Length: 55
Image: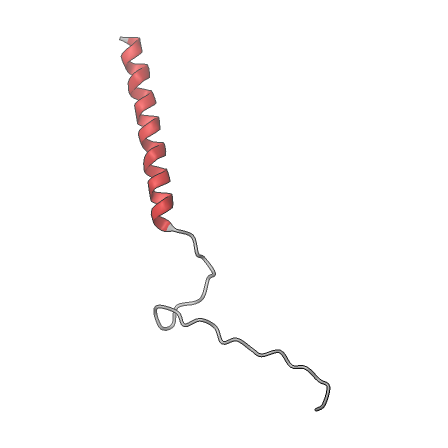
């Protein structure tokens, strides 16, 4: 039809594994593991310092 605009449709990006659903989760897992390790180390360090002060 003349004068009717239809937007082009984009095909979804192919997933890495066939049959896996697209979740939209783009977070970096390594970053969260590093944050967890740093927090755990800080917590353990504070317990060790407090324990050393009590002696």
